[in-house]
Image (cartoon, rainbow, N blue to C red):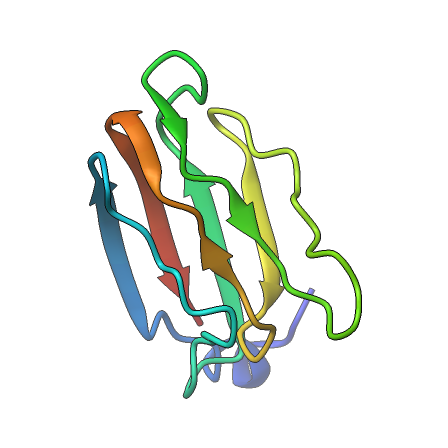
Length: 101
């Protein structure tokens, strides 16, 4: 548990609701959340039920991208400098709460 001085250095830089419909994506494989330290993505929708497609990918140079399991209610926490992208949503609506610290 951080002391109060350390805890006061941790701030939410941004909190956004990303709603993505068919054709929407974050296609740039070299996208990162510059200016933040930690990114937290919370899946609000039900993959395969509320939407299809829209897989989060974590590109790894020279390898196949990581595709984490990301179900409703899951939170993915990763360093903001890590590259990430989202494949196009095929059907429905994908909603993710994105917070950057």
